Image (cartoon, rainbow, N blue to C red; front, side, top):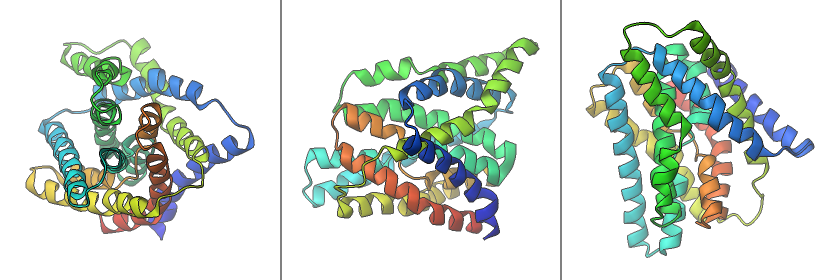
Length: 294
C-alpha cells in the first residue's frame, strides 16, 4: 500500500483536481491544451533530452515502441478477422488498445516511481508515442487520410526533440537564457497535462457503454500489453531501469488524446472515449500492483 500512497495517489489526486474544476467551472480545454502542446511540452522535451546522456538504450526504446505497436495492431486485426467484426469496429479497437497514455499519466508515474533518470526515458517515450498517435493514430482514425503526415510534421514536440539532439552535438553549452526558459516552462508541463487529463475525463459521457468491447479493450491495454512488454524487454538488450519504464508505460490506460482523433474522424468515438475512461479508472489498482512487482 505504501507504493500506492507514494506513487499512484499523488497522480490520481492531480487528475481529480482537473476533473473537479471541469465539473464545477467548465474550462475551454482546447485553449489550455494548445498552450501545453505548443509551448510547455516542447520545452520539457528539449530540456530533458538536452541534459540526457544519449546511448543505444534510446535506440532500443524506439525498437520496443515499434514492435509493441505492431503486435497490438496485429492482435486486433486477427481477432477482428475471426470474430468477423466490421472495419469500423476494428478501427475503434485499434485506437482504444494500441496507443497508451505515456504523457499525461505514464510520465508522472515514472517520475514518482523511478526519479529523474527514469523520467528522462519516459519523456523520450512520450515523444515517440506522440509521433505514433499523430501518424498511425490519425491514419487509422481517418482510414488512410494524408492528414497524418501533415500532423506529424507540424508537431512542436518532434521539432524540439531534433533541436535538443542538434544542441547536444554543439561543442559548447547553450546560453543560460535559453536553458533557463526551457527548464522553468518544462517543469510546469507534467502537472498541467495531468490536470488536462482530469478535465478530459470529466467530459466523457457516462452512458451508452458497449461493455463487451470495453472489457476487451481494457484487458488488452492493461494486462496483455505489459505482458508483451515483458517479453520484448527480455529479448532486447535494455538495462533494468529502462525495462521497468517500458513495462510500466505499456500498462498505461488508453491515451486520452486519441479520443480527439476518434471524434474528429467519427471513428467509433463512443467506444474509444468510454474505453479511455474505464481503463483509466481500472488502471489505478493495476498500475499499483505492477509497481509492487517491478
